[in-house]
Image (cartoon, rainbow, N blue to C red):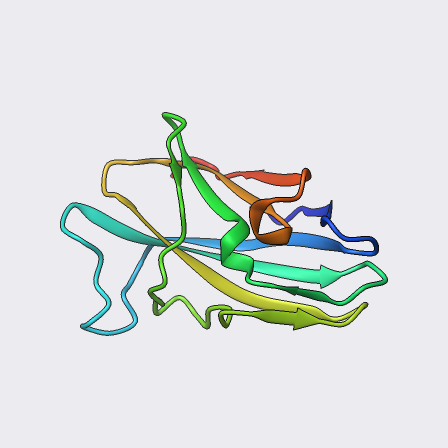
Length: 137
């Protein structure tokens, strides 16, 4: 983690330097109404997205984010926020040279050990996927 990976999107001029800043596992619910389902926990991943391209970045970052556990199971984000910090809004726009920072929250089984964080531009449809290893706790 902490490494910045250069990713490209589907459109000409779309590229980001993506960094996984931190993984909070488990992450506390933001309030009493946004608790994980029974047998599950929240994991919050903070991403920094720096627009290194020539086109504006406009997307929903959570659409392209995934967690993978040690057994190879993949988990999609949830729309809940956690006390780990501010999440990304539903849609993010960044001009060339600008950076955005935010958490994406996942709901995963209590017994799953998170092994990898993945991010793909263009709502997960670009051919370029970044992957970061999560050290065992």
